[in-house]
Length: 247
Ligand SMILES: NC(=O)c1ccc[n+]([C@@H]2O[C@H](COP(=O)([O-])OP(=O)(O)OC[C@H]3O[C@@H](n4cnc5c(N)ncnc54)[C@H](O)[C@@H]3O)[C@@H](O)[C@H]2O)c1
Image (cartoon, rainbow, N blue to C red; front, side):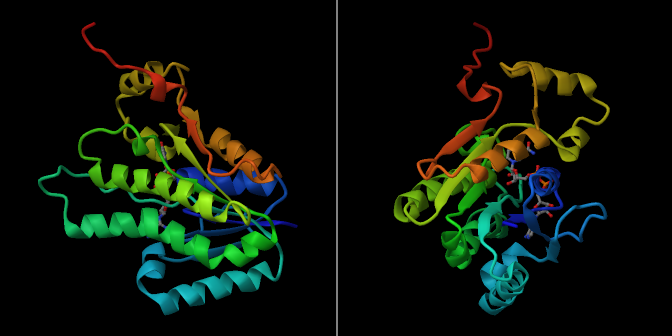
């Protein structure tokens, strides 16, 4: 059975990725800062802090060798760099620590994890799939650190695809709003706000975590090595829409 490694596996999108990859017949190695959710259908779960794997090389080696042990020589079909943090704040107060944490988790960890598992991915002609965001291209006030990290993640995907495309495929998805418990929580007591956001999309819908996970499976499953360096928007068309209030 081919294996996939998914970060941020306890989150809204991560848990959908774990379920859908598991249903598609992959052995899922899942990891997150949070403890393993009770019903997560993965083969192995590692609770670990991505930031520590950036800052502490010997901790990183320990984590990676633990994962190699459970891989046990199996091909690694994909590394899905899905975990991220979103520290919001205006330019006046965004701190050095906010920047460091954001770049460690959202950018450096995806690179260092891809670097660490390159031999296993190459052996499987596998895929690195980076979960970027529409914020790589379109953003709003107070999102400077998050939006910059996602723009850099998209840029890194392109640069790595150029260098490594003959060995592994490197792609990214840029989702817009995805219907997760966290997104819903932001609209608690404000159902009309949720409907407003939904109807603002040309598709008149918000993305589903399962739909996103099915797209991820199809990218990983495709044996087409030409799907490399692809940055795939999943946004109901909102990224093409000019918002022209008053016209
Ligand atoms: N939900 C959306 O609407 C949306 C839209 C565009 C992009 N995305 C991207 O999709 C991905 C998943 O988002 P989500 O909505 O499921 O968010 P989420 O907050 O539900 O999940 C993120 C997961 O990452 C984990 N994580 C955070 N810091 C970590 C660390 N230091 N070490 C290990 N794990 C850590 C968290 O514990 C959490 O389980 C993210 O990359 C996000 O930027 C989400």
